[in-house]
Length: 567
Image 1 (tube, one colour):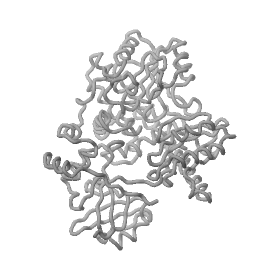
Image 2 (spheres, helix red, strand yellow):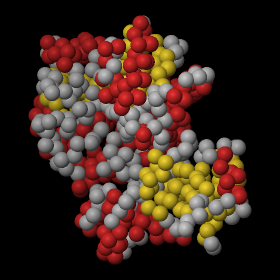
Image 3 (cartoon, helix red, strand yellow):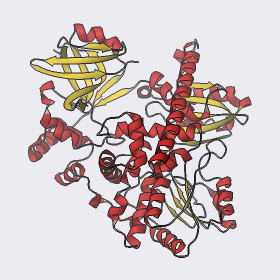
Image 4 (cartoon, one colour):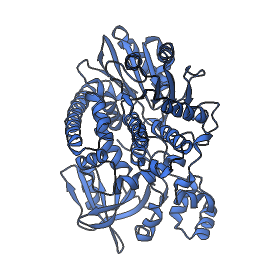
């Protein structure tokens, strides 16, 4: 699918002034200004993220109440249960708090719901488990903000709840003992984009502070926070960027034993970056909860004994391989359905149902279909007599609003503008498909019908050198709201050494005048003839390639076009 290219606009006067003031390349200054980093102070803080810049945990609403309740439980030898969701954020949250209590010499229990039996969030089964174990305090992490009935049940059983969540609350809050959530309307905490593990980290910060324990002991677990933050795809700005920066240092130097095992299984070479974690480590942790139970991942993250670690990582690897098999099957069958549909070209959305598809991986499959066809997509399977599934958007189209307009045909749904989950009575499935197609067709804009590449700046090939890389790398770690900048270079030529890789990818050897550079273009093998025969333009990110102990700069190609003759 042809992508549209859009070059971001930046005030040339501002660029020139900033470049002169800070002695930075114009292209770097353009990126900084586009991210509202327009002063020496802002840029200095951005280039030098530090744990000293973290906000006091006691700025978060009810932190004093939460920490006091935990200390009271410790002093009175109450039984404490750590409750977390089954994804990376939830399991890392429980692992972090488990390590915190271990540091305090306190033994605690933990609970993660079964995706298929209990579903997302706090469950009544979890409350019954706590009651049977004589638990009097539950700390719920990465969930709980909408668990009204479950928390009422816990209260009736004499169990207090501390909720550490980051999801958007309803107008009213559950009747928990206390709730930590920076997205509460009455919470003045300066940074709102923490993930569940980030909120848990703030609770641990507050607890250590009140108990007079050095924060450095808590920093030993920042690899868990970085793992959760990157895999939950939250904004990599502010505190998140600080936590990920420091957590990456820990991951690349002295990770927890379980994380070390994940790195080894992923085959990723150190130093790891955000993408390595999101695509190499995260799927393995998620696979445990998708294919079986998330306890396997949690036990790996908290284990210290090497024999235990080896057992857990092997089971997780089996689950991850199963996840990949299921995912491949769903995607292949989905593509076959789509390609056989004679009306597909004119349809604005994709809704597919197959009762044999694995419930745990349909969300990933939906994302793969969006990547290929760039249409709002819903993938459904059968569960307990219903069609249940995952919705993923294309571009910036609000898929949650589209579902909301079809709620007459839905038994339930939830999510946000980019992704959602839903359940449909099988008798309503065809009616829903028609209503959803209509909702998408009426509201989708032209720019959301084709992928767009936003380019930060145009570069001459000779500008990409070691000094440029030093300044660019200061902007990492890259992720949501701080994306790896995309650059454009025009009128490039093959040096004569470009070649296809596995008939699918391209390794491009670039030349412009007397300057040479290598580029990798994944899944763009069809552009080989263009690269070999004509001048072309590239949009790309710049990365450092480490191979056999040597490092060099290379371009990661987003798209290739034939150069136009400029008048």
